[in-house]
Length: 193
Image (cartoon, rainbow, N blue to C red; front, side, top):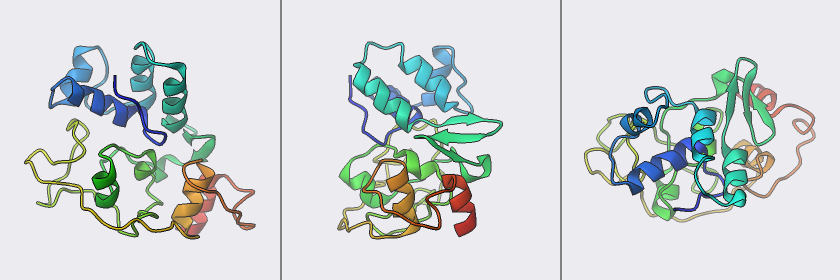
C-alpha cells in the first residue's frame, strides 16, 4: 500500500488508492464498494479506508487530516470552520503538485487563496480551463493528459494568514497572533475574509 502524507485527507488518499488500482474513475470505484460516489463524504471514505490493513500510525494521520462535515460546521485537525468555508471542489497548487502529486487537506479551505509555500494562487481548473472533478484519481495530470505540476521555488511561508492557518492545523510551524489565537480558526478566517 501507498503511505498517506501528513496533510492528506481520506478523499485524497482514496483517489490515490484508486489510481494505484489502475482505475481512472474514483466515483465508479466508490460505488462498486458501496460508498457514495457522486458527492464524496470524507469521513465515509475514512471509514472504508480504516477497514484496510494499514498501520495505526497511517490511520491516525489520515484521521487528523480528514474533515468531519456536520450541520454544525467542518471539523478539521481540532479546528472548526463554517460549511461555507469548505469546498470539495478540486483545488491545487502547481508547485506543490510538482513536488509530490497528492491532495493537501488545506486546499479545500476557501479562506486559503494562495499557497503559502510557493506564493501562487490555488488553481481550480486544468490549464485548458476545464474543472477537474473529484472522480479523477490522478493529481499530476488532467483527464486530458495536461501536466498540473509546475516546478517552482519553494519559499518560506512567512507570516501570512494562510501560514497562520497551516500552523494551527499542525501542517507548518505555528506562530502566535494575539488577535486570532483565542478564536475558532473559522471565525478568524471570517474576520480576515
